[in-house]
Image (cartoon, rainbow, N blue to C red; front, side):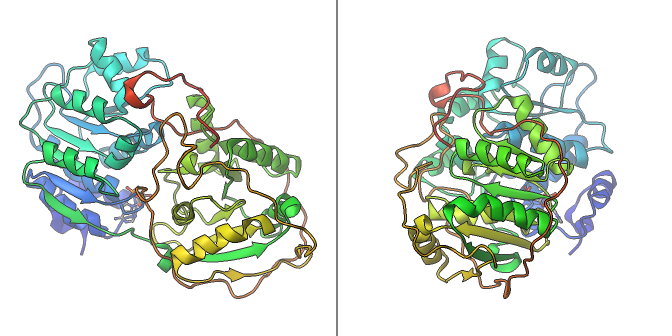
Length: 463
Ligand code: AMP
């Protein structure tokens, strides 16, 4: 099936083909005609399914079908997202797919100056992407009027609820006309989500799609047993000897992410850490540098990495296994996207055998274990207790509320199939040349739970 049959205009189709997409993904196939029909939808689709284009393309189409009278343009479509990074990514998609249309859009989120946002809003925008906290700041400063919104999108609504945004969302909904189209995207359905959906949506069409690339299909997974103290050395060796250019590495804690990033730099591998304590500028810069290939290794905590869309990421490394097994599935979902095969490598020391067992139980299979010559684990080393980053019981949930209670997480509970690498191919190689590191980043919305403004770089727990 091609995009041409979905009812989209030539300008939109041109933007889609500029991106090199030849076929709509399942969520796009299902959602686009329904949204074009003006119906509400309740879509169970995660990041990686193509959901952003799934709502952006028909939204652009509907808005361009009915250009408003001359004068200042009111906001006619509002996309709410839980985090700044997701807001920025959605806004980028709107720009990309709308580049041949005379529609304007902007994005507003916290952690950056409000005045440039006010100016952009004043100039008039058709489509606004926002995180809830900063949006309400604008409303209270009377710099934003939502009374002409025709289409509301709640993206990753489950995460918004997890982050305590429900009151903000309800306040925002009350500012819009009752007559409007509502599109709700959520990877999971808790009772709270159901309540929100019931109160928000009118006769919604339900759309349910699995991840486009589940670990089952496209991610090869391998465990390298190694001693705790030699993980860093092994990682540098693998990056250098196999000439990996773009690697996302997971640690359990912010401190661990910083330390590893600094050590990699010492090994001559350009690296940045991305976690909850960094300014918006630093986060954006680190992500941009990584995407552009200036930073080879991005070291991230689970929460920081959630929702990041980094195209065609070839390598994901679990430098430390997550405490919550579902996070493993989520982590490796960062690779093997959009039809590209990915590789997920886990460096596992004696302390983590129980965590590995938990992951294998969740996956319902054993992962293949390959010892890299020269990095054989020392059998005399005893297991030590693991420093808790985020506990499975959820009792060290970050203060910013960005954590997901167990079992409610996007990407949780998927299964992975056997496509493990059959042999180690490592030989000692020279470390790569030194690159530059440009700061670090983190992912948060701009409000604390309960709607109180949060400080930009407030400490947010351990992760
Ligand atoms: P999303 O689920 O919206 O985060 O999209 C995941 C990734 O899929 C993004 O990198 C998109 O650029 C890409 N993508 C979206 N639609 C298509 C398509 N029809 N064909 C190929 N890739 C796509």
